[in-house]
Image: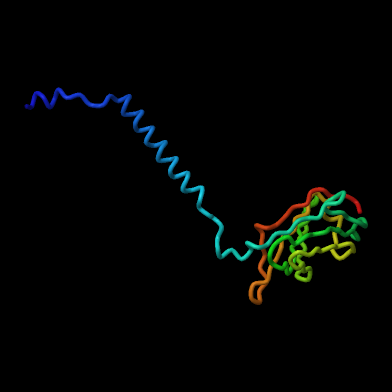
Length: 161
């Protein structure tokens, strides 16, 4: 009886490796199919309905004036499902960056914000030529205004008005 037990042949290492790899691939495929159906959005994300777009004409953002008396103009479209209660505007220049914080720039859902005056100042002497403008939306939750940095948009097509 003992002699028979030691003479039994097992699965060769090559076949065992092929079976193990096949099992791992099949298990990976099952996990990938489950992962495809998972929704990673946070249901408590207060900024989930925020979406703004820059209206493009010949440019996304334009500037007027010169030196320390310059300003920028733009048109933003609120395509989200909530009202925008303010904007942070981050202007990246060749010499430095400038951040403007505006709680008075409001955009109702489905409407436009058309800035065609000198209400958004910029100083070419301090910050240099404009390379990029980033718009960071703000929303009101209860009585506080919160920023939505993940919903920010960048404008890089900048020209003279």
